[in-house]
Image (cartoon, rainbow, N blue to C red; front, side, top):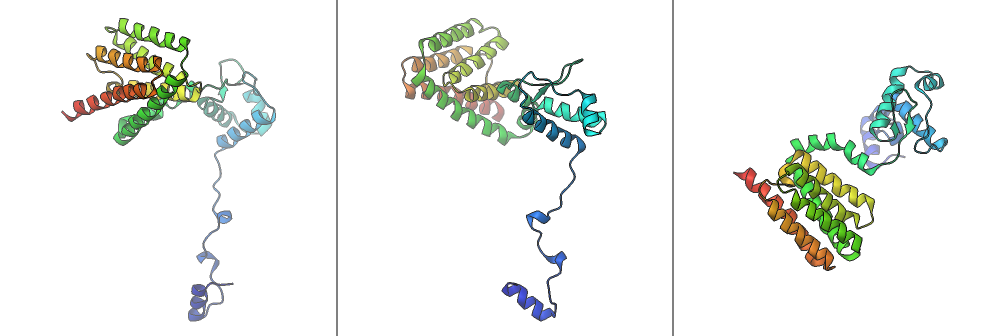
Length: 262
């Protein structure tokens, strides 16, 4: 059956059918491009891990065994292995068989570091989006912390704040403890993904835009702001804690813009 437009076209041209080459291609007819050999090996290795129910620490077949199993050369096997290692799926150690890696959220964040460096270096809009996301995430994290904090949580945060005060003249250590303070707040949520995301965003900014997480000479102000955040958490005052966190993060953003506008 033809539609009205197709029927009119056929009557006007005297044609009996629309040429196949003129017809739109369905999803099934789309050209299928061959996969790289190493990509195929990677897919098969992932299927092998699932089919054999391999656990972290379990060994995979050696390169030589995989070459015989799949009938291909070493380069494709090695490329697939390196790709899976980069993705955190397997561990490869010199002289030993590759093994299934232990899952690590921090490992995923670290693997994204190279890509994030490129993005944050060459895309101002991406940096702005990341700053906005950080404020939204950490303001919500401090609200949860104020609701759920325990005596142990407060003690850990107090110790971090004291350690940071003692490191005022050691900028790298001061910045490191700063990140630990923010991460510890997120850990109170009990959700490791929130904790890892907070750590990741801080790490990316401290590595590629240091001004976003620390400005030399403002250590006393940072400590005062951290104290206000901790006081809100200690009083279980979610609004005060959230307000202190927002002011702390937005102050850093505002100073960054002032510096770069000059």
